[in-house]
Image (cartoon, rainbow, N blue to C red; front, top):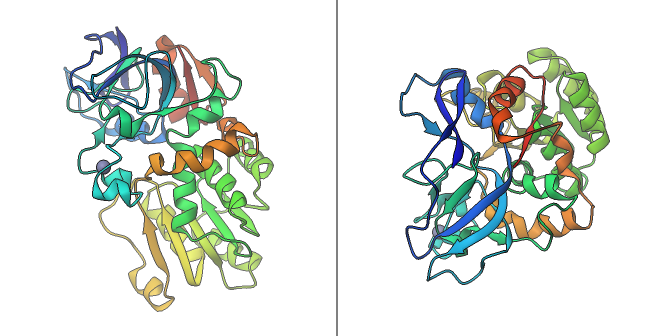
Length: 344
Ligand SMILES: [Zn+2]
């Protein structure tokens, strides 16, 4: 079968790989119908050292079940299914607490002989705990929004929860990528009052406004912090969604939090240390977040997608076939595209 393999920075290829197949009795074999390129795929795209064998890519996908192992009970051949970006058993102590991203028997797509999602088919481990049957046809018009439940919408929701967004609270979203835009949707959905998008790309901030942002701050660094304070009576915001992961974005996020506020970080940190330890200590700022337990959120978010109350699929501004995926990486890295959907 054909699949996406990264061999190093800037070197993404579509190659023939061994066909996906059932291995464990708890596996499902899913033929992928839609996939996506993630902002987090761009970190290795910029930095990975050359590797002849390469790394299988992709962790956001929807597909049709082709076959299931003998122990699988919740999905069957022919079901249209979505998957969170991590696989998990749904039964361990952490899954029961809703923290599927720490599943004791879970893992990542593209590692340990598990296929990546940017390919024609995927062996899904722990299928009962991982997959969610979707009540739609494989070409339903809602596919783009349903696909965001694999990662970016659930991740934006996680940032909003970690930032304690609630009715009457002011919110800032740092980062105008797909996760930040979904963070705006999540903040509005949870009742955030003023929702300030920190971003500077005209098409992205325009979309942020359509999705619920009430204000846009295009300055950076200290000027951005000043501007957010001006908008909030000098105090800063209650809730900050950090959706980038760089030291500068984290400094901005911590700087715009008001005393007693909370920062939910979902951008993968590119530095070891969290900055601004002293100021955030004296302001009693809570810092939370991490990899989103997306599986825990699908049930909550799915009805809103099916009813059209939220439209996170609007973050996709480019559609590509599998062979166009390398150019999709380039386009996202060059900020030509916000997010690329792969239509198989
Ligand atoms: Zn588990």
